[in-house]
Image (tube, rainbow, N blue to C red):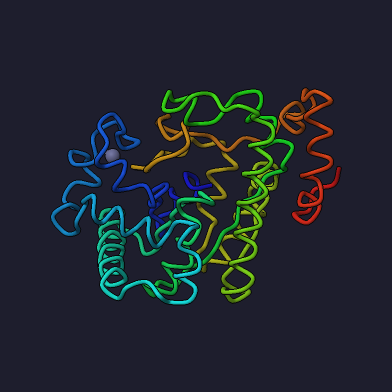
Length: 289
Ligand SMILES: [Zn+2]
């Protein structure tokens, strides 16, 4: 979704911005284009405007991590930290708008740990007009992907393969979705929250993109025409996370029959585990068993 929407002329997408400083400062974690951030044509120059320092990374984590929830919600973060955070984010977003020639920044930070409070903080502390696009996926598909393929970090060689992948997948999926639902319902206006099913994006892309366009106030006709033609979408200079960012371009495909039920090859243990611990939330998100 990040990559497709990032191909709209009004939108600049930048991946998981919460990890910008961490990635910038780690050798061997380049921008999606393959260059180190300081040499990348898109990101270079940012370090002259904002501080890409260890201290700034700590402030970001202190405000955005799930552990900060209480102090962020009760507004007990020290004023200096809030001011530094505000200056940093305004600098980053201005740079993105200018470099991308767009008026809307798409940030796909999605960790329910590190970035749990990010969307709230960007709205309440920085003062941005944040629209929350909550992309959900059938929990069984998430579980099957994790069990059959493994986590992104393990696949990229940054972490060992997880133990009990099924339990971790369902736990992470439940926490992330409940968290986003809860904070959005409590603190965002109804017209600032929209839920998208991943399966609708791939099966009915035109209808889904049109609804997203109405939500953020942009015309989607050009993008919809490109999806209909089966065009490739360029990957921008994305930060962090998903391994598909290192492809030069992607296509938004209609699901094949086999893709539609990726969980069909899960064993009986995993299926039963999901039925007991995951299906209740799957139903809330509109997925029938
Ligand atoms: Zn780049």
